[in-house]
Image (cartoon, rainbow, N blue to C red; front, side, top):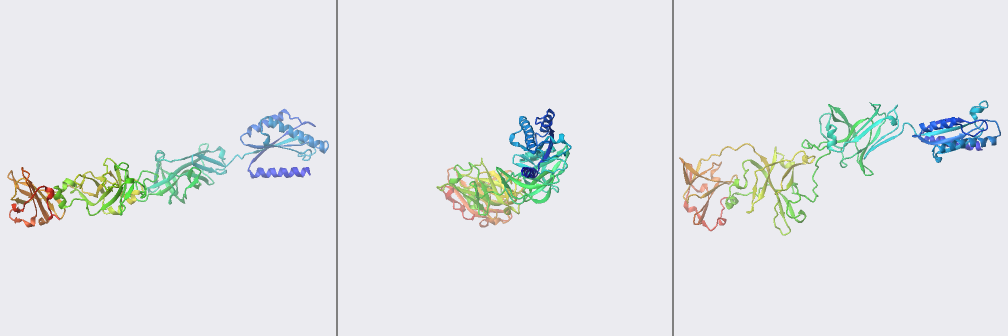
Length: 563
């Protein structure tokens, strides 16, 4: 019964060792006849085995035996004493008692037969050892590489030098000469790049099995990221597709990772093609994406012209202001002919770039406080304006001109032109982006760098009015107003004759004459050229004095023919 129990116990131990995939190492020490004292050479043998197995030893099994001389009961006790002798010595070396298993069998197992009496007087010691080729988990920060044993046969994991790292920043990628292009030159974004390598004695190894990689994700979870492998092309790393998706980002504790199998060494990355040619950002991790229309600092028009308002653009916080972005496609904020006459300004006064700018619309930010008072922007701040590409589809190089409201209420447009801000990221696929002074008023169009040809000045307006008047000429076709010049003839200035510029339709010109005497008397006249007498030979229009009207102030002028 005792022998059956011990056999079952030994079988269970063997199953446990096998399931744990442990290696076994064993030896025997021998005793004098009828003795249980451990010999010095036996102690030395035990010491040597303890030394070589110290980093891999899991537990120790000690079993005592005798030869067949003597009774069964006596031999069972003697085998127990011999096992205890080895057990106590193992303990004295520092081996934990809970890792030592003790067995004794008497003369039940005569391993060397009845003729081998001296060899049967023994203690059998078996070490259960950790496998030499073990599963290996490599970890650095959020990156993990799991290398199953046998991946690099015949080399064992414990003898291999592993290298593994990630490239979480643009500078890290640049320093490693890792590009965001594939083997054909197509450009990509990445959400994570890693490197894994295995060497034995300096020689590169190729895995026979897949390794499991947890690649830290730099950005947020998005569809479309595919697994690519790195290829050295002239000292730079370019990318080759595997045809496999990186899948969704998974949460691993405090880490967000892509988890995939990888049956090779070298570079791997989760890459996504650039959305368009305009998406030329140098940021390898995506750059600026579509604006958040729900953000507190964002306002937009019905046509989705978007303004990202900087802190300090207005004297008050924008949370307490009403800010409307208006696409002024009819140029209602520009001065028309009559308004220019009323304010007494020429087109170049309020729109100096008139001849260089082909405008398509104005973008006006109408801002008021809770009392309805208008608020102007601060030109020292920078506002980001985003315009849908569909609105500039016919323009090669769209620009914005900022404008500021003057005290009289109209907008004076600047000559400083602002070109689009390129290479920000996917946002450039949807929008033309401008970073401009935060005045809140902008003219959108295309700049004409070609200098305008000199305008012919062959028509003359002769007036029967007080000399040194101010003469404004407005073209109803183009809405352009200029100041007529005193005519020069043979070096003499004729102050009552003014040079008019040639127009496609001269009769569309409207003339405003304003005069103020030294005594403060104010008179004005508004006429169309079609109303005046025309002398064809001299190409001269003649204006009579009777056209003048008296006013106390020029703000009382009643102009209507300019409409």
